[in-house]
Length: 396
Ligand SMILES: *Cc1c(COP(=O)(O)O)cnc(C)c1O
Image (cartoon, rainbow, N blue to C red; front, top):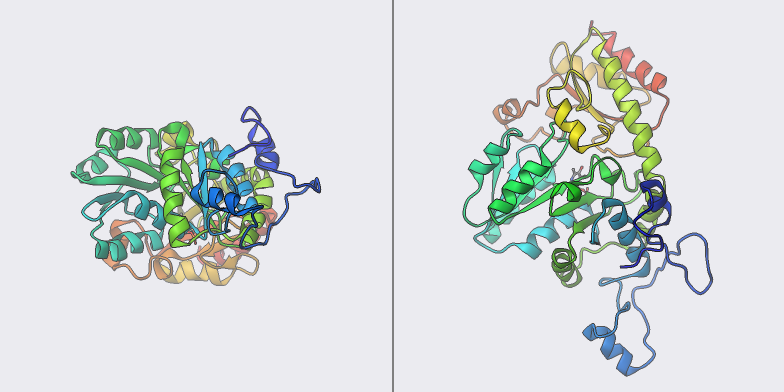
């Protein structure tokens, strides 16, 4: 996989230039190749392309030049040897498991991972003989206790959603390797701009490109990154099974990556400012954000992420009714569970994203009725504060 700029460049430079390839027209902006298949010069070339003896595109379920540019740019940002793009974040997770595991093997996953990932691991994979143990809390010892013979993958998201708990990537990587397993990190919330798990020892990084990589809520996409030998296994599954990324979505994400460093910096800074402001509001009892000085995981977060990211949670005084009042008084902030957009969103996890799990499991997982999650976008901070202040004023 070629880089049109070397890896010595800074992230901001890689974001706009890495992976870019020009056609014979010498276009400045990366081209969108909307074609399902590619033509060969001869029968011999067709045979060589199909057998893999000659590198080159065959069919867009296998490879496509626009998708390749997006993969190369993201690989440069994550510092990964290889990247393969997928139709969505969930397709990336499914492809990883299907490519690397077999019946009888198991996964150890953090309890607070994305809802659909929990459903895939807990509800669907057991049909194929792959089981998952979910670990409560962030303590690596709890992960150690859950590992069994046949454990192939340790799976985390850090910081977690919605409680923003931080997992020690380097410690969990050592633990995984000691057990002959791989550490997989879903790096959706930080993106490579704020955290590069592969440099800390993780084996694979997963992305939902639907979130910050596109960053403007337009398309679905995903990616798996890591060492070439492992990513090649995932690619083999994808080219046969089919959940690959469309060239159009790849092009949107490729262009989205160009502004990723700026967006992550601005949204992250705004989230920290909003978290500090919320801490001072009398109607707010608790603010969860890994980079607040009040957070017990502040020091660990500082060792592995350069900023906190744009997601924060807070608890209001009172229960569900008080929390819903804050939501219902928002005129600007969107009431939706989506995140990673330039538009700020607010969610009441206990009645939406975590509404289907039992009240006991919610309590054990810290998802209280008074908890709200905000994914901060690019609006003016004062407008966001005013939008939340309206609802908070009805509580205090
Ligand atoms: C959204 C999300 C996913 C799934 O991504 P899709 O693109 O919606 O399939 C996986 N992990 C995390 C952390 C997410 O937020």
